[in-house]
View 1 (tube, helix red, strand yellow):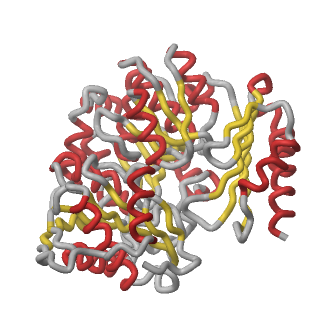
View 2 (cartoon, rainbow, N blue to C red):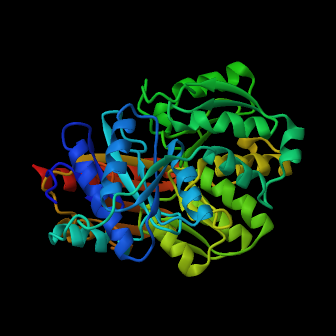
Length: 462
């Protein structure tokens, strides 16, 4: 297949701007090729399709379903559901894989196709590379002799997802309900509106909703980072709520706001979920290289091994399989619990955080205050023609004395200073990210790291 140069093509799928570099024709051809790949892998011929709330979703689901049908695949259409709901459905029903139409946290003019394997997880880096290699080598998009498959609606996935979460040994719905939490919930008009109010009701919580309508008409940048959560931060203390919760449009990331209206940072979501899991079950924890050191602190406190992997859910999941981790995820608010599935899952994270608060009887702000306070500073630059690999040597030379990791761009760590710097190409946007972290009382040094690295990156782009 020929891809527009501006389309973001990676081992996890394709992502672009609707009608510009992502078209229905491209979606149909890509889905047909994926259906053929699934069949040739011997995984079977029954896949799911699902979408988030973006207005372009229904059209792209029809296009993807048509492509899968031409490859001889049967299709179960889950409709508008969270991404983790779709992937759990693949796993629990023993299906052959799936396509989720979602651009996750990207602005509303974007959409994407994400590809799932029979394990109910995104393709591994190796599987994704093999599939893309076939496409770029000019392999036939599908078997011309394949009989067209059928498409059928498959309702009930959200209810099944809720039931699986409430049935976890780690979650005690009665204990959570007894605390009667009041929660302000911001779904950013994404797919969270179809699952989180119902889940919280089952957990006995009182919900005050912000942007619950799942129509994809985002009124703000939908990424659940502190800069975008002003309305939630104001509403929590105004309502006298215990905490606030925000998710991204496809509901695999959870951000938290404490009772005083302070956004505590997405990294705390994984740290607190890990604390809850490790209080019940000891074992390794995996997070990505851009994750806050608060997660490492939780692991040290519990006396368990902490591992880091390149950024990306597929990379973290692969590392979790390898070390048999009991919990893991990413510092963007994504929590993965292998007991449920190897997928970032915000509804799961909601239950784990409430379980922790119920078991400890403590407020969110007091729990966070128990840990060392770190600050993360981030910047982004247009990717253009910049080759980060070519810059790695210059960047490394500019910041001596660090432990170096080149698995994902360039990661430099100064353990004695509790600081790190990560420069990497985004897999979801045409940008380069420069991120650094250190103790809060050394924030000026952290900002200097980002500024100095950013200057080198910017010069390369001139």
